[in-house]
Length: 399
Image: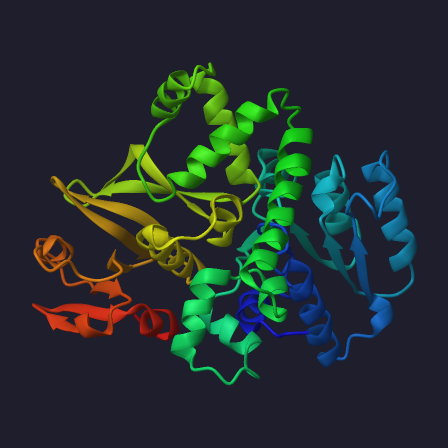
C-alpha cells in the first residue's frame, strides 16, 4: 500500500467528532486505499480490529434490491456490545435511502462514521436534510505530482523526467503503480471512463440516446479549458444534423460533474469582485481522460498544463476561478480564506507578446502572481511576477 499522508492529515481533525466524514472523488482515484490507511491509523490509536467495521457497497458486493433498513440492521448486529465502533462504508451511495441509515446510526449508536463515494450526490440536499451541519466533505483527487514521485521512489530517473511521464500518464494510482506503455495505460483509463459513463451516468439517469450523449462528452473533452455554453454546443450539434435541447445539455454537464469526470471553473470579475455566471470553463478529473478518447499530441499541451495546475490548486484547498480584468483574462485566480493567488499557464512565454506577464501586471493588489511554464529558459522574476517551472510550482510547499 502506498501512503497518501495528506488525506490522513485532512481527516485527522474530524476523527472522533460527531460528524460523518465523506470522501468523494472520481472512480479509481484511491478512496479505498485511503480507507486502508485510516484503518492503520485507528490501529495505531489502539482501536481493536473488532471495532473497525469495513463494508463495501459496490454492485458486485451487495444484492441489487437491498434496502437501507437491511443495511442498518446488519451494521447494528455487527456493532452490538462492542463499545465505540468505527464504520468505514465504501460506495454507500449505491444504497437508496442510505442517508437515513447513517443518520439513525449517528443518533442512536456510539459510532464514528466514514463514507466514500464516486458521485457528488453524496452531498445531496437529502443528506443536508438528515445531517444538517453534521457532515464534512473531503474531496479526493488523482495523484498530485508530489504523490506521483512517492509512487515512483524506486525509479532512477530524475524528477524532471518523471514530470514528463506524469504529464503523459496522469495521476490514476493504478497507472502510477504499474509499468505500462502509453497504449495500455490509456486502455485502463478508458475502462474507468466507460464504467463511469455507462454505469454511473447512462444507467442511473436512463439516457436513451447514448450516441448523442457520447458526442456531447467528446465535445466537452475536446474543448477542455475553453469557454463555451450549452447554446454553443447545441449549435455545433445542429451543424452535424443532430438535435438536442439546451436543457438536456445542461443535464448531461451536471451529471458529468456529479460523477467527478469534469470540474467547472467559473469566471471572476476582478474589478467588480463578483463571480460571473456565464462562459465558464471545464477541466477533467485527470488529463488521461482526454488522451484515452483522443490520443495524445503536443498541440494539446497548453490545455493539459492548465488542467494539471487547476487540479493542484483544488488539491490545496483553493476555490479556483478564471480571472476577468476588464477585457483581459487571467488563467486562474485561487481563493482560500483570506489568501489569493493569480496564475498564468503556458508551455513557454511567447517571444512577440508579453500578454501572460502583462495581464498580471495590470492587477493592482499585492497577492502573489505567477506564470507557470515548462520552459526552463523563461524562469525568473519580471516586474514582481514570478515565472516558475511547472516542476517547481507543483512541488513548492508554499506559493
